[in-house]
Length: 173
Image 1 (cartoon, one colour):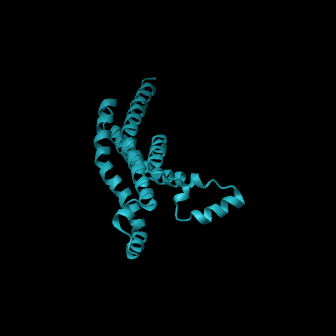
Image 2: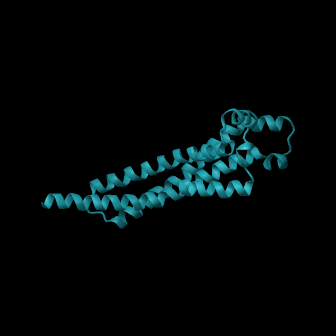
Image 3: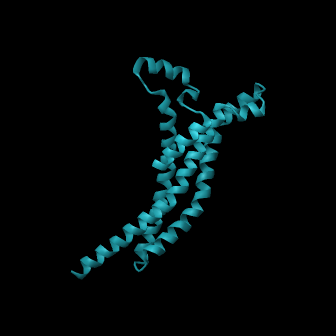
């Protein structure tokens, strides 16, 4: 999630996006005046929550698969578990990134149709804050999903081999 936060920071600066680019910016400014709510942080929080859901799903799927492999084949080494985790994860990366992008596009369809019905030119539409925010969602989520695979594979390999060592030590005692 830290890397997703860094990706958000970099891409939001490149795309010149803040929470004030959100559809509800006017309402949020009024809330800010009454409560002190930090509007510029809402976009960040929303994107990280979306990324968190995807990364949790990926990490749990990889971890449970690897743990089950280790349970059935206790002789597997940490390296074998890591390589298997990378293979399992690489299969999942494409579908999860696609799911994230389709979810963001799906949530934008109605707004895009409204903008197109008003005669918004394609170039203007593509350079709008609305598209930039959806692009930021997709990029940040995809970076998080891609990076969760090696991190999860390494941690699971370490924990399952350490767990196996502890179980052997207890059995020998």
